[in-house]
Length: 331
Image 1 (tube, rainbow, N blue to C red):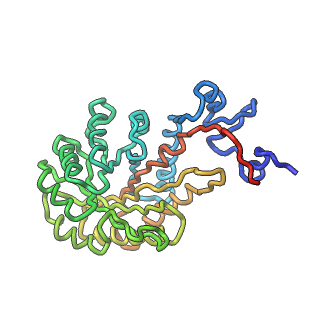
Image 2: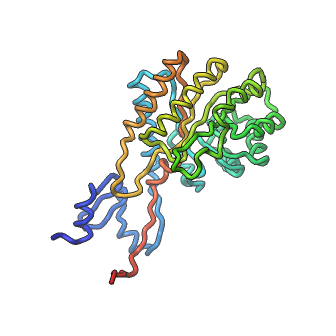
Image 3: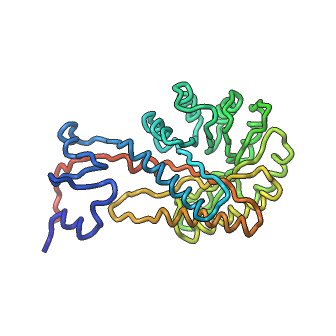
């Protein structure tokens, strides 16, 4: 009977998988990098980042969405945004920007990162910056400063009703400002937070738009934002929530012609174990197809699609290497 660890791996998993290989010296490689050589040089533990993997992930998602748009003859564009909270390290963020991404922020200090990138000429004032998260006063003021100083494509995503009043006071541009609204999604009953703590309840959004935004020359509703904490999964809850959001989009579009974007957030899963199995192409095709189908049924134009992939962008580019120090056998 085979009872080595290597035999167990081969009997249990399809190995090696993408990103891993075993070289002629029978040692493990991570994206073509010899792990044993690094262990000999640096010892353990250590953390490594394989930067080319970031571009591979960005282009993978772009290619899948653009292929789905072409396949389904979808009248809309795709925009890839990097979620900065996944890794704020400069070498990570700057690497993502080499591949034509836009940026998403979550906190007040993220705006300081935007300014540093601008000063280093890594971005210009035309880049799309999606501003998510709960907004403290400092955060809304930082966002307003970006807009006031000429960043043309900053989109503050309204997370609660009070946030909008801050922008009315602090934004001083002549041109109308594009804003978004985050929809508070409902998770499956087994999830710790059944209703999202972020966003405005869907039943309140139409009233909020009519009362606060419609007819206001200073602001335009450009985007609806939707995200489920459990991620993008092929199950009844995800498709049910996505359809609710799309029907709300269609309802709003009929009274708000400037609305032209759906942001489905992040949530594409990454490899956490050797038995990981996820059909990315199928899911992307289903998302694009579903959006088109619902919009066609409601006789409204299909929106541009935005995503905010963070872990998907950087998660598989990194590895932490440890050494086994001892064995403890069960008695």
